[in-house]
Image (cartoon, rainbow, N blue to C red):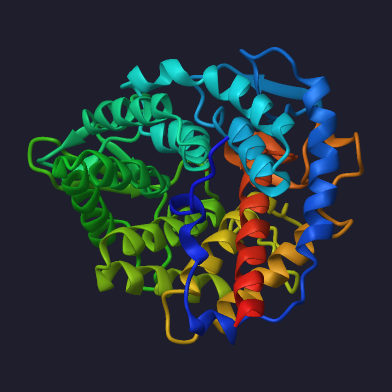
Length: 396
Ligand code: GLY
């Protein structure tokens, strides 16, 4: 298979002399990736129904797979692509291809904002690593489908069709913009880019509190474009800081800066990072409680998925600021914690997922203290990004 230069999902990190002085060989990424690989090996034989995408575990601890239309379904194939990137072993590319094919029909799905997760993670990584033109077409169609959810009056992409809201927009939605930025770059059609920056600007204006934490859901009036209410769905309370939401915002605005070089997005990402890293409720191991303001802390559950997303996002963010060292150090601590026995599953256990202890949706009593496939995906991405920074530093 033809290999392309890394960009996009792993972009990050091809850069600069700055990086050289921010990273020291600390975290043993190869050892961590070998452990992840061993666990993923067990999943290859355990999960063979290509219509049931590994997602995590149910409340009783049993395995949970999902159909392709769920927002999490692209992460397993995307993780297999990362494993191919790491090993260069065709076995992983073959598996990734098999699972990625099952996501193809979602390119026509206009009922969710999650097409960035669902398509850009598997097909984006597959395209980056193989240059397969069919993958490009799937993503372009996906970008068209996602754009149908944009409303010029609200200045946003609608997140959900379900629920009690008129036009709900969730902070997570920032993660789906990468697909649109990519689509403009590849097609030359600037309409995707315009949708993405308008959404990012509106979210910047309406989703954030004065302490730089974000609301989960902002509901808009489609006639006036005004905010109706700011609430939560998966967080502890309307005014609380749901940990994964902060992680999505940090990562999403970092990508928005990469793609636009608009300094306002960089400032937004830096402000979120500051809120997150300086929060008095962030534990010493830097794996957050599922909500920074959950009143049961320190007895509340941790969310490994938020830590993994944040670690990966911080590593990219570190390459855009003058002194990225504190971000690299924090990410290193997060990845080290996640790779320790406290969060890393024993081989063959944990329904074949890599990480323990994530929280999907506690208020709905769903996915509490379970493995989640996206925690694994961003953990591996973070390790690969860290490895690349380390390699670049050693070349200097
Ligand atoms: N995007 C949904 C979640 O983070 O749970």
